[in-house]
Length: 87
Image 1 (cartoon, rainbow, N blue to C red):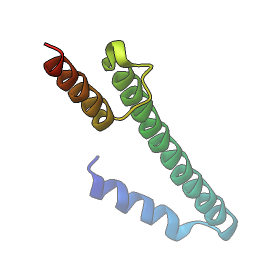
Image 2 (tube, rainbow, N blue to C red):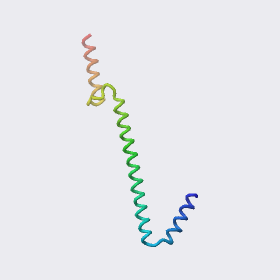
Image 3 (cartoon, helix red, strand yellow):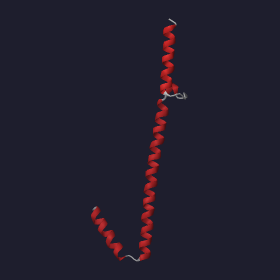
Image 4 (cartoon, rainbow, N blue to C red):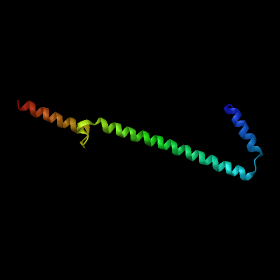
């Protein structure tokens, strides 16, 4: 069945449905929305965790370093300057 055919079939069934069943369908559809939102959040969380792990694995020998890259570059430049002065 095509999407349009499915929608038409659902509408036909809804038009003849009693109020209590319509209320049930509404609750069911709300549950589907919540389920979909939860699944999307799980996927996003999973992707974020995977990215964090990838970043951690790329840090190499400086993984335990708590300094920023700018601070690291500054310290390296100081070391280079010191070596140049002491040659």
